[in-house]
Length: 143
Image (cartoon, rainbow, N blue to C red; front, side, top):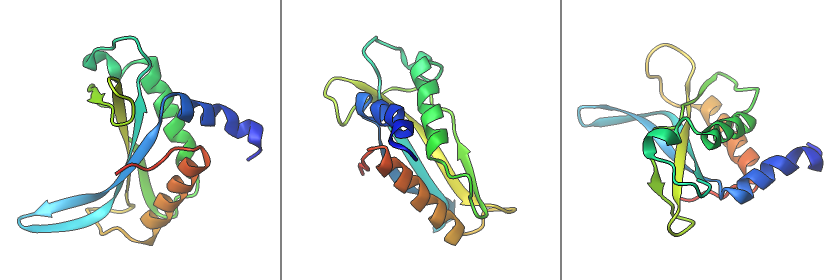
């Protein structure tokens, strides 16, 4: 990508303190847990303006966060199913800006196929591509 193509997304990440964490997507059966993929949760600090939790998921900012998520998902998924889940109607206390609220959305990566198949190389490659894109835009990982 040329620098001018990266500019607006890098500015979005900077302005809204976009960061992410990665969790395993698990299926729990009794006492057994099986990893079937990953969840990349994108977090963004809401602009000042006093949104209510019920309004957060439908806000223009949430729509911008979804559009940003679409930019980091690779076109070539190699057998992984990628779902960008809509933001929940919830606000979270920011871990990066004191006194601010954040919203979150999940990018879910699972194996393409029937049932809850174990995660494999396709999901790992897709996760690596998402991390690389987020790094390119300047979004830090926070766990």
